[in-house]
Image (cartoon, rainbow, N blue to C red; front, side):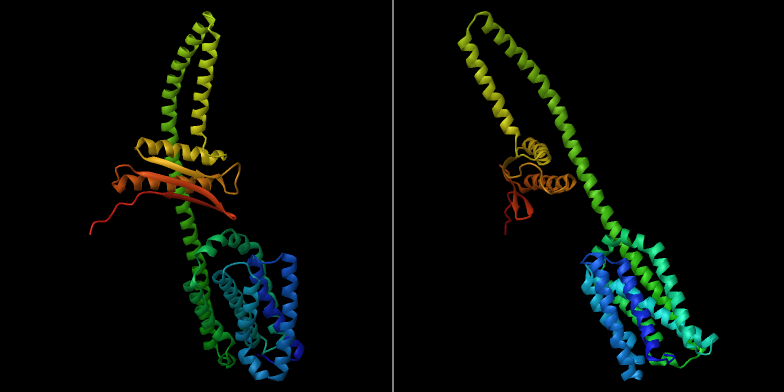
Length: 383
């Protein structure tokens, strides 16, 4: 833009591509390890700078006109390929890097024109100072908060967000990098500053809006989970109340069992005593078998709570549950999924209008995934 040798062009290319790639990498979650990713970045940057240098020598006018826009496409394709994030989030990081690069180009060129009579080295020094300040702010002020909200952004950012930031950044970059920028005037400088400011505000607002949407969705999920836990705790409290009554009944029965055993011992009726003890043992084992559903304690507890709830509503429950020991699913997720589905199944049975409603519960493993299903009767629709 201000001219210069092949080496000056190469230095500008290194600073521009380096800034874009540095910003992206600092905010990114790459596919590969950080060490391998950095090496790929360095090799790609060197090849890009070399090709841009030859382009500058072969077609100086074409380079000045189109280098900025081409760098957005070429560097962008490479960065998106190296990223493990969604294309929409990767596009946001890419446009941010391109925006900052455009700002440095504009500031370097126009600072040199206004105060240093178009000095090439004033342009270079200005770019170095501005890029250093930008990277400092990103590393120590932005990166941590961005990574804390990156999962929210990854879930929420969509095609609309991509188009919004793309249009805003390209409008501002067009003013800084397109040929009309080279006809220097203070009016043009002020106009470009306003456009860059507006584009930066849009970039920031897109970030804040989608971060807020992601957090709001997360809080909504947490709220639903807490409500599910509250319902489960209430069911357990009801069961505890029932258990107290059951315990009182069991103590009453045990007292009668003890009296009967004492009577058999006192009369030395050993055969009758052994037969009675055997029958009592079988009864106890049959009760234990009915309470045992599967080998996973969490699943067993949740299903036991809602099976008793279903029986209170006179709903028959059949099960096919194959979950022994620990499974690779968090207990909080098991509660949220199983309790919600089972409770909805109970409500569905009550609303079905069937005289003898039934729920069939199945929990099976499909490869690395667990499938939980509740089947209920469906009310026939009269036409």
